[in-house]
Length: 458
Image (tube, rainbow, N blue to C red; front, side):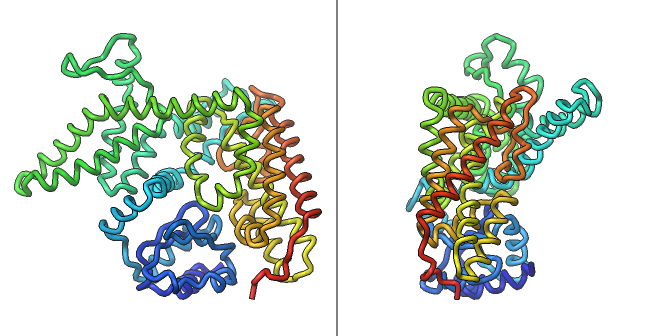
């Protein structure tokens, strides 16, 4: 696909360069805020080849592109003079909708890490398959080396979050990395795990926490760092800034990190994992049923981003996740199957082509947005099939105790990612859950039908 041409068409149909306040992207969507919303040509945008749909959340427009959105974003910045969002506009956005701003922060910090987390998870899965097949023994040097490939990503996850958080909050990446590295430095970790009370200056308590694989402590630390860097520019004269500014931000943030931010972040993350696991252990089928039914609306509003940190924290601490990632797996397949049912049933040639393309991108590529926005949301009734399929499969997954071992395993061809030597029945469970999702979604979508007479593709 010609990304330059696609970018030019998108910019032309959102009012041109001068109408853009800010532009960014997540894993599959181009996100823009505009000066004049009346210039946003929704119908024309949805007709562009390469655009799978359009949604709006508050004053932000989301243009669904799919996995190639990163390349599109780079092409737009390269070929167009886009105005950046001002601090005044950012502050206004925070005051207008704190929850929305929180979702943006999560998206900006977590989304860039999804590819490496996915890769690490699939390395773990590949090792499990190879060891179960007796092709590679767990005590071999090759196995240990590749296990390091995967384990290092999760063990040093705080450092990865430090980098993306520094980009999001606009502070020094090197300073952020230096500070967060303290949390996982062996001597510091050893001091905290020695079993004795740790006190700074002999009277300030330092909580005994384990920070490997955590993300909230890093997020809080880098956020405070960004504020203290800004403060240091105001209170420390330029003449002595080369020494005192970095010393002030490093020392002040570091002390706050080990005494307040780190412990608070650790227990916040631990509490999230505990809460989700407790709810799941109490009634896993009910938990998955509710989230499964609501999954289309979570995807439409972008609120699914709030679930990512829970999945990451659980995956990093236990090695598997049995709620959020399972719902992502189920709802993605369900959206793709609903689009496939539309493709097979409609007589509209252009809708058939759009639905086929969206279904393929979803079922094979594991990206739900093309089917959700380009087909199911626009026709409305297929959403009933998605909700029925996701809810039913969620109940089955909860009863069986299905577990996910890698992020990104959301397509029908990624089912081998559910193979585990520790849980030998898990792969069979994944096949059952996928089968239930496919059968229920397709049947309900086909029987209920849809009105494609108003499907505007012209």
